[in-house]
Length: 174
Image 1 (cartoon, rainbow, N blue to C red):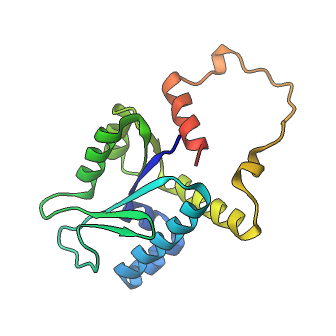
Image 2 (cartoon, rainbow, N blue to C red):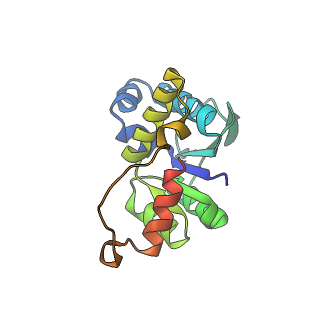
Image 3 (cartoon, rainbow, N blue to C red):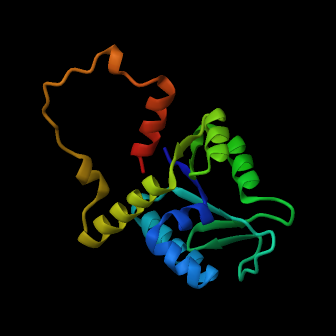
């Protein structure tokens, strides 16, 4: 099952050390670096990806809605925030989506719509791992194969809630 990953663009850029450095130098350069990382990730994972940026007063070379290397790039309209666009997408996609943001309001709303959520730093780790495995020629599925023997018991008192298990299952597909 393919997941639609909805990303809060500037939130992800500013949570990453490398991307925030580029962002401080030039806003466009930060966006392009993020799109390059997402493109490398998409080559490995093949998920549908939408990146939403605030477009209220920002100049951009892109239109309000654009397709860059198979990644949908959205800019919010004047008088609208990227958070509003992300919430609308999460509401439309519901369980088929995964929202990447560290903004609590966005994360809570997405979770209320049964969309899986992932913080920006966690997703950045996934991006880095995917690019690393792509460079090494390792399939990401091969990394997860194998039986991990353990005698640790996991009874009902340690069981995550149904919502958390569903969220973890979707995040594992990244």
